[in-house]
Amino acid sequence: MLLIFISMCVATHISVIGMPVEVKDIEEFVRLAERASECIVKRSSDEVKLKLRAGKLFTLKTSPQDADVIIKRLRCPVTDSQKRAKRES
Image (cartoon, rainbow, N blue to C red; front, side, top):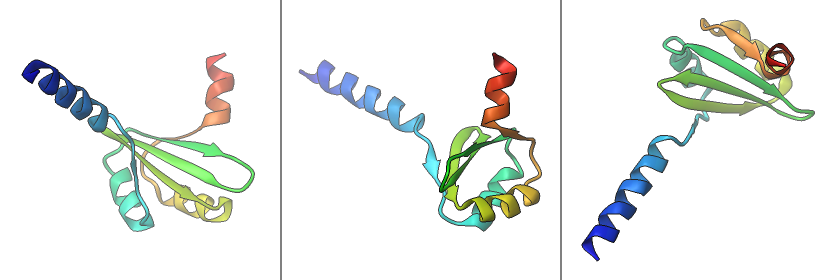
């Protein structure tokens, strides 16, 4: 019984560590981008998701107009997911 409990705790801990963190504040997202290796941009018709790889995965959901302004402020390499998919094909 104890072994099952321990294995459940370990599995839960591992899955929590790998989960992306959603950032609500634009200024915090820009600060996180300073230590990020890459920013991936995923565009849909009504929103844009910006994803930072900085040890963990951080995401920010915003409008297309705000996204263009935020992308100009980022100091890490920016990759558009549509261009990335075509390049990998």
